[in-house]
Image (cartoon, rainbow, N blue to C red; front, side, top):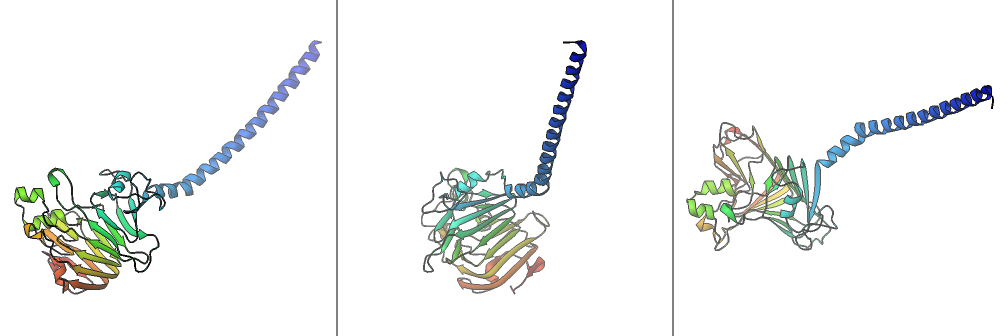
Length: 312
């Protein structure tokens, strides 16, 4: 092959290579453009939604037929106990802003562990039941073991508690009841007074926002809520308690073990400083049992900083 032929072949090969490289570059540019578009869509629209969804968890509990070895993340694989919720939500180092707990309608859930959330914990029943079925019952349990043995459990560790009736079955919330032979070790050993017991044993402690909707609240030996005002304003500048739709509050009879400890069927107990900045809102409220007037619902609460939709 002559030198001229070799040069021509070399030029043709170079041109072919240049063309192939150019085509490859076009493909790369197209792929990059497509990837950039998908990334922009993900970060601009999908990503915020996914981040928001990641901050929320919905957990299902069936106290009768559930299993704590289930995932708890669907009605077909519910947990059995309240304690399993604590395990999946991060314990005392919560990973979720909002924890939604669905409890099988018509069952009784004993809340004998603490569940944490960065912001809110919401509870509502799930599942269809006959209108004649028993109420869904949320019952305050007790600590087991250690220095807190026998102390009423504080099941909600968050800034907002929302308990919402949904479906045909009624929804009841029961505060702690001292049964015959109950032992609260710390009270027995340290001779604690009744006001401290209310502070330490109320079902909801120092939560700034609480809402009950269509709930039958059964107050046994412990208050539903307690607020501790250590300073002029305490932990929060304002507290809010909402009783939405139609709620009923029942003052239950003293538990058989209450003479050893105390019987405080109260909606709100204030520990220490009584000048709590509190908003009280109720739509339709029925009182029964040992509670005959609105004033029976509160203990150590000064009305100085209270705004209420009803007369106390």
